[in-house]
Length: 211
Image (tube, rainbow, N blue to C red):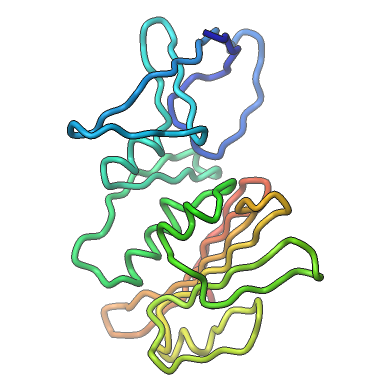
């Protein structure tokens, strides 16, 4: 098994960065094991890497949460890993908003994206290159129409014409490079508030209440 020098071992394969020093390094081994969940075999492919360190198996947190019906996200500012269960009994739009926050990740291919979100509502080509932007109109009314190619329909979100919009930007290798989620939430008084959740090409994130 091939050896790797790792820093700050933690078993969670989420987008994060830290400065490593020699004193923080440990040797770990690639651990090509097979997985079963509730008796059913799962092929994790090349997306995830499993390691062995001093007899302990280190499995990517995202892999485990996905197989157990939850999702994971990392907040760089607070250095907090969040594990959140998939909403039960919510609308399809609510489930897809959750998936955009806890299942979608940079480096994903189109097959995995379509697994969670289906075909995009609109595709925009960037400067006639091989790069694309996919737009998803989540929870949109049957007759919903919006002409802009890569701008958010803020007024439509405020009116309730749709519940959320998701923009996925692809790189030249056909992998998710950046994504922007705009979604609504109702206050106790019934007023709709718009929130944003953005993951940038360098892996950093941002999210806020839109004013």
